[in-house]
Length: 278
Image (cartoon, rainbow, N blue to C red):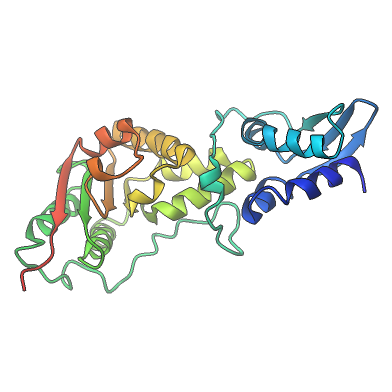
């Protein structure tokens, strides 16, 4: 067993399994001399993330193994032009979809064909949100941008989001539209960082005409994902592309949401879906 394998064995007892397999398993031992252990990592983003977030854990493992006199040198390929996206420990703790390629296609768009405006039951509790969604679907980016929809579980937020997508694609096939959950956005971003494909990731989500993001409250407290979504939001908004977001509560009630995101979510129209009167 080489020195890095010994250190990894100790680190594995200190971090959660998902984090270990995401950020340590892809590393490999290169060489050692009297003072340095050289370790290969997949890319510069990977290296920077390890140094920023796990330097303490690595040092602790080395102390326990009485290897404090050694230094670890991570070697990666030359950096890409993309700036570093930092990913927090909370984000890496989220489950990664099994057997998903590093940057899967965001299907156009994973929409449920049953969720249309015609199949949505309109009542006094959701009439305003329904009208706002219809307006956005009919003239994307020219009515309300962003459109922020919120309401409790099972009240129809996702139905309306899919309804927007169905309507847009039926009436203008030239528009590029993507529907994605906030959780999947985060998981794809983590994989993009891990496999050095962050440029492809950004290109995919910052060049759409309509972006529908469901359950945005999921990114609360996840610093790296919030930073990436902030820049995605800005890129789309500055290009006059339509952004539609859903949540289980209004922006000001989402805990641990960065102020800069909260303010942007409030730039357009906020529409709530209430529980129906019984």
